[in-house]
Image (cartoon, rainbow, N blue to C red; front, side, top):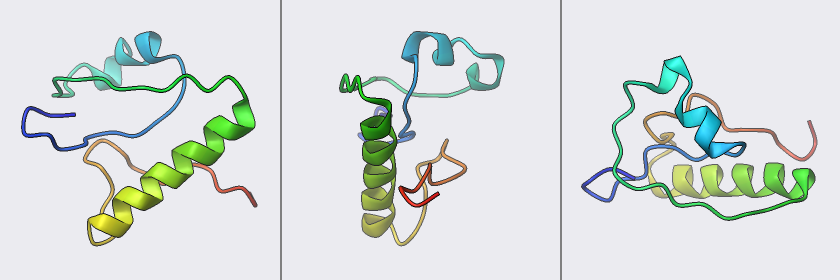
Length: 75
């Protein structure tokens, strides 16, 4: 989340490791919020749900650092 409260990324995975990856070094954010979901299938489900919810509220746009919508249940 940015200083303005804008959601800049929705994702899943090993947060600490992903934040250290070279392609994310220039990302600008102030807060990391997360939920621990141990079941991988539920991780995929909730990631897709929250990305789609964001898009519904933002005229189809993705969060600034999201390039894709995540996996759909039928894929």
